Amino acid sequence: MHCNNVILGGSILFIAGIIDVLGIAVGGSFESGLLWNLSVFLFGLLIIVSVYFVHKALNSKLFSILLVVAGIGAIGAALFCGCYGLLLNLIGDKPLLYYPFAVVGYLALGLCGIISYKFTRRPFSYFCLGLGLFSLIAFGVWISSFDISYSGTRMPSILVDYSQSLLLVGFGAYLIGEYSHGQLATKAN
Image (cartoon, rainbow, N blue to C red; front, side, top):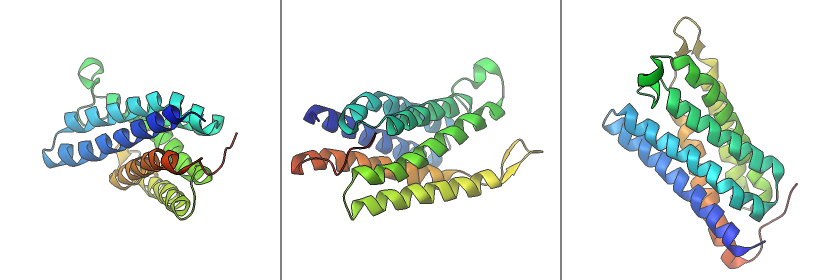
């Protein structure tokens, strides 16, 4: 494992999580869907960029594929969100395009949280597992509130967003710090 891969992969994931948390907070405070969606777009893009380095560091195809899927889901959700999605001016108001991307992205990132348990040491591995499980439970609650007649959900996805962003911030910081203390916990294929 090369130190630059661990540090770069962890740094990019850390920055992606921070951008998402700040984008949610600032976008929500100023009621700006554009700021929110721009941060989600950058979040997804940075996740995809991190995959090269994370894969080199962890050597896990499954984890890398799930990260790519999560990044694509975030980018698609940002582009097609019903609240000032980045492409809505071009395609018209089609918020239903948002949901497939959001569902796939949320599921993939929640599974990444659970799988990251393999790459971390106790007690932090429990934190990763807990946030991964919590984000999947929050995702289940969010998706169960889907209302066909409304063409959307009745419950906001903020708990899923925050839990997954915090997971990336923590996991990214762990990767950066773990290099300075030795090897990663385990390797998985």
